[in-house]
Length: 133
Ligand code: CMX
Image 1 (tube, rainbow, N blue to C red):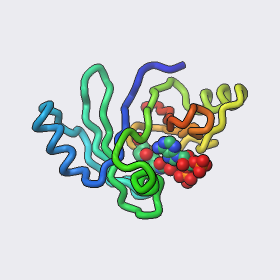
Image 2: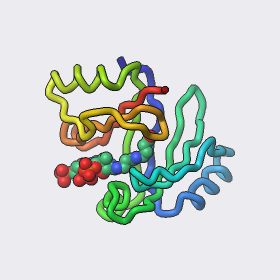
Image 3: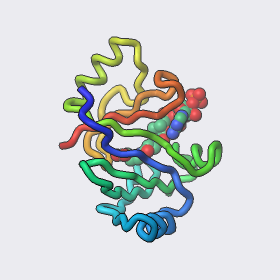
């Protein structure tokens, strides 16, 4: 079951610059800034109220998915993350409905246990399911 929008992720070329900009404009401050090497990114998570966050992603691996996204589309919204109670259960039930997953098994991300749905199942929008652990 979907609980809420956990975060909206935005791909950027320079994470520090964007974090500073959003701090100046909105007074927002990052909770975490962390390298996630297995996903090829440096990520900043910024709370925006009611448990929802904005996540900025800067590529640290030129072969990674976010680097490819920036090359193809430029800076912009990369994915929407929806919080669920049980990622494994959602993978099973959505797969039974014909939804294709990039991650057939959950893996660990900044937002907990995560799994990406293939954008071809969701009209070109990359959706991440995440479960707090
Ligand atoms: N929006 C829309 N479509 C996208 C997309 C995006 N953000 N990212 C990839 N795609 C498309 C690709 O164009 C490709 O389409 P075609 O099959 O038509 O060519 C398809 O989805 C598969 O993409 P890929 O990069 O070739 O496939 P991979 O399995 O190698 O990787 C993905 C998929 C999404 C995991 C990877 O591209 C990616 O973005 N990795 C970074 C994940 C990330 O954001 N991690 C952050 C921390 C996690 C957290 O928030 O907790």
